[in-house]
Image (tube, rainbow, N blue to C red; front, top):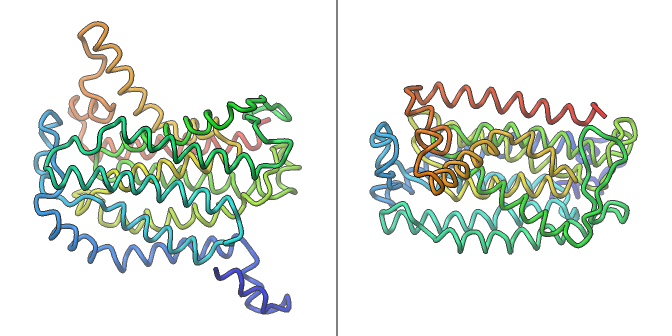
Length: 360
């Protein structure tokens, strides 16, 4: 929205600053951060009054989680509100990729909100059925992937770019949209599975958003893509503003989610943020790199899949409990120990993902 101030610029005044993506990205970060600080406590107080007993705790979960009973959920509303407000304020509103990513984020947020609402009102951990969540997610992801493919340059439409190699594309053709659907829905559910400890999911999401934001900025700049040998996707640079707003809103939320958490993000936040990461990867043609940058989420999801399949086949468990962060809880690791070590792993994976821009 503020980009339109550039029409009053003669090229040498303060309004000219709004032409620069980096300047607006900084503004988006601080706007979302301040938004989180201003409205975090009032929102938490409101959620506590409305939810009463708060988020129900799994009876078969780690015993240490019992003390968290009564903590309000749906804290993702704080992140999404800060993110949406800041993005609309600072991004170019004529950019299709911004709207695609925002659409996925808010639509998955609605699915998560419905799930959280069902859990809180019924005071059980079932919520909306997984089948309904998956079907709605696939519908949203399908629309987003189709839209993104239509806005991609003709030479990249339906193509899958590979990291670490130059000028190599796999032509998925009509299968690109189903592939994009899997990427977005998979990312959403992987982040959702990771959100099991105070602060565990939000920091890796911010780290991944930072890496994807940098990738978006590079991919949307012809000079950078020519130098690095990556594929140029015009317009994706604006996604950096979304990513900056996500990081700012995430930090504002983490202020209240740090152990012991005053609020949980719930499915409202985890599904939305995971879907956002998937949508960014599809828009920037870096779907495979997302699996590296978000490797922690991949491991969390795989631990659940392996556990379920192995148990059905043998009646035995590979992990003491899945997702894998609960396995380490069962082994006696303290919650902050698990969280911080997983943060470190996320940072390392993000750096490896960024290295794919240069190592080709």
